[in-house]
Length: 341
Image (cartoon, rainbow, N blue to C red; front, side):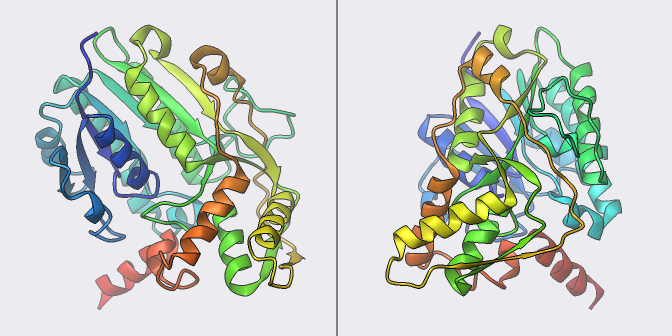
């Protein structure tokens, strides 16, 4: 196979993309970032000198824009979506359009334009609720929200386009954690760390729910690796990608422990447990991707907490408890409010 040289990253200015794009540039790829830049147009200010970065502000639902953007691309890493359940439910029509209806045109146009590899970021939340000790890729998809459902429905759509000339692969990432230039504080580890640092108090809703986790450096390293592997190893495959399965209560204890280590002069952060109607709970197995691709995560929840605390110390965020740019649903609500004015 000729080397893949030009990569289109949809949603490239998002939480994961903001870490992935610099890694691709450092590896020598030419990168096109297609994003609405809803959370700020300054994401890549620190790497503006990278001549191999092309930033395209636009909507993945715009098929003419897709056709133009995909010219000369060898690979697509599809990250763009309305992510997490509350954001999806806020505007179901828009979410359906972005997460599902725009998907097949993107895949079809990619193939028509000569793209040779398509990497789709699905989600482990397609499993919904499971009491299995560890959920494998063969486990039935039991989504309990529309977000889970439509992410899962895209997977067989992508599979239809798999061919000798068009290699497709689906990754089901665990909940991502850690620091990003486009930070999110609406993900479990990040939420609890934000509250522990600023309030010295962690509120746990429920707590028994099991959550698989993966550090943002590991999931982005995986996407880079998927560009380098031979087609024969990955064509048409679906993989879970996670590391530590932990209950929300256990994650709170980890955050409390790291806070005590990093700030020994402060009183220990307190933990309060409240009831929750969030029943999503599952533990995933990532043995398949380890066995077949040799992918073994290197970073832990503890590393993610330390990275975030370092960023807090370095004043990387502006009002991380309230600023809408760190919370998907807050940003969507503010945009909807502006649109009605």
